[in-house]
Amino acid sequence: MTTFSTNPAEIQHFFDLLFPDAPSNAYVVLSGPSQGKLLSKWLSPSQIPQICGPLATQATRSDMYINLGLRHPNCTPSPETRGENADVYAIGGLWVDCDHSGGRHSAQNLPTQDELMKFIQSLPFRFSLLVDSSGGYHCYALFKELWILDTPAERDAAALLLKRFQRTIQIQAAAQGWKVDSTADLARVLRPAGTLNHKGGTPKPVTIAHEDTIRYNPSAIADAPWLATIEDTYTPSTATGDFPPTQLEPIVAGCAWLRHCRDDAATLTLKCCSNNAVEPLRAAYNQADKGSGAR
Image (tube, rainbow, N blue to C red):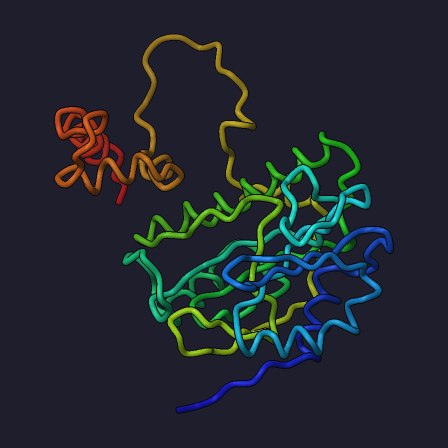
């Protein structure tokens, strides 16, 4: 059996890419299991070079996670918490977690690893960084500089942009029949490159698969013609009368509840989601499907 090792230098490089010129008073939060609980370490950016070695050692025993948003200097560090969306002070880019069928996942509608890479390469933009998690790719569109979220309005804008970015990819994946999970919360954790993925019992490497020099301004992504529009950005229509059929698949792709009702109608037992309630939805879906040419 092949034994894989961790890589402190790759961990350091990953941090450098994700948090360039991090404010000295912000917090980098690392999380991992300890005595049956997920505990967190709150560190200043200056401590990262010293922590990469111990982090690599701990990653040989268990999964370790990096919080993708730096935490606000006003936070009160505690090992019992990793912070919430409201505590995020800065992000270094946008991200999406794309699974493939080679990993251990509950979803069955996933591409192969080769199909996923071809899909990533077909998107209308380039990722700055791809991290191979041994079950998929963590894909990052990195910024030219950290986006400092000074106000609740800034955090809301960042959260909306992240949601639209992920929705763009989910819609295009759904057109291929594949699922991409939503990880569009600013307090998201993912495995850092240079560690190991212990999911499934056999540790596998988490490595940087691809780096690109491209960096983005958040405003450039927000204004990009390929970025999906979601309800937060809709302008209410004042028109009346008949409207042409819409594409249903993007709506279903963005709503786990609708997919659940459509796909699992035969096995749902809850009264509020009985077949009597779900069958009309399925019929409406099938009818709209014929009219729209979706799927």
